Length: 267
Length: 266
Ligand SMILES: Nc1ncnc2c1ncn2[C@@H]1O[C@H](COP(=O)(O)OP(=O)(O)OP(=O)(O)O)[C@@H](O)[C@H]1O
Ligand SMILES: [Mg+2]
Image 1 (cartoon, chains in turn red, yellow):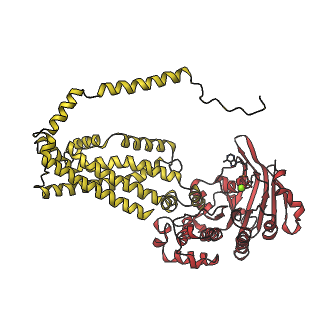
Image 2 (cartoon, each protein chain N blue to C red):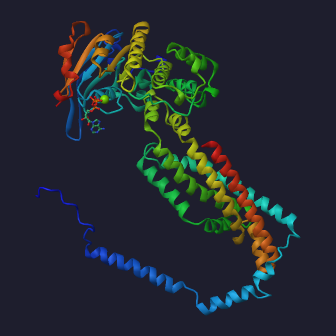
């Protein structure tokens, strides 16, 4: 799959063994409102990083900037060895294919089966009708989709309509769809937000286990202090549009993190 | 500022221009009624003639079904025109509708053009389209089919586009973020969500086509309307009534059928 992802510039080769993500001097302005300014950080591969910050501090904006679902105003992003901001539209699509996203809402297609939804993930590398509906998909794609479903524990629900599942099951289907992309990097925006605490915890544990067993890198927005402490290797805290905290989770204490979850302290 | 909240005035003040506008609308309505009303004496004489022993209404009864076989064939042709024109129109309405949506259109210029075309197709009546296509392809059902097709692009294009605008954008954004193509995003995430509304619109389009195709023959675009016009022209009012009754049966049958399908689906 990397074959058709030819390096967009000379820089990309040099970061192969270094960090998977380097953000330098990143800024984002929405109509004169500065949401992010001068962000600098780098992530090592195979780690789970939690991004925390008060409501409106720009966490979702940062995540979307990384894959240019929102265009950054300034700065540089190197991710998976690519200079993201320099990618032409075609290369951007190929790059996004390598980044799996778990959204706050599952964003599945409601009237389709679980299996069809998982198979949609293959559209990162296959196009045409065989990637649209399970009935038209090649045997090996269907088999891989069943493996992905099995990984999230839902192989037995493959033919069910996706809107007949519970919220937690739907979020797991979304994760299976993301696995179908064969991602190298996972971005998660409050994947547990619309779930009850117990189910949310299961989803977070599932994401972390994927990081551990496949060596994927995870950057996740978390709005629950306990989840941040339990499911991350490193914590980045966002405040006033800057990285105000950056430390290994092992060194973190709940009291020091609290201000990133306290809405009153947002500005 | 007062201490107690004061309710607003019951009627907001109108400006002079608003009064002028209201007066203009009233004047338009009154003058329109006056200009187009039939003269009372003519109307009463016409009604009297209608019921006279030699009048149209009396001549219509009993309806003359002696040519039921050829009329049935023309009725079938009418239905076929409706089905063919409706099918082609619905098929072409999909690309027009996609190009006309905010979210899926590749460029604002394309979007405005598509919207303009759909509006034009919808605004010009199907009888006018029939006359235009008769000039292009000659008299006969082909002109009728094309008229129905264009009319249906206008009708379904608008409702398809509205359905696609109203679907949850989340799944589409997710597909785009996966790296799916525009076509893949549309077919795999937009169409399934729009399926119930597309089906309902298509069934309404079919009903509309059947009603419309019966009239298209009046201008020579094929179907049973041709026979109806001939029957009236030759004062065969009893056969005209037979044709009208059979058209009624066809329209009611199609409406009942599509209503049944719609209930099954929703
Ligand atoms: N498309 C946009 N246009 C204008 N302003 C925006 C846009 N998207 C986000 N913002 C603003 O940017 C700020 C940061 O929003 P963002 O969604 O990134 O915050 P967040 O940290 O994810 O918050 P939450 O915890 O509520 O999810 C907010 O003030 C928001 O109003
Ligand atoms: Mg957010």
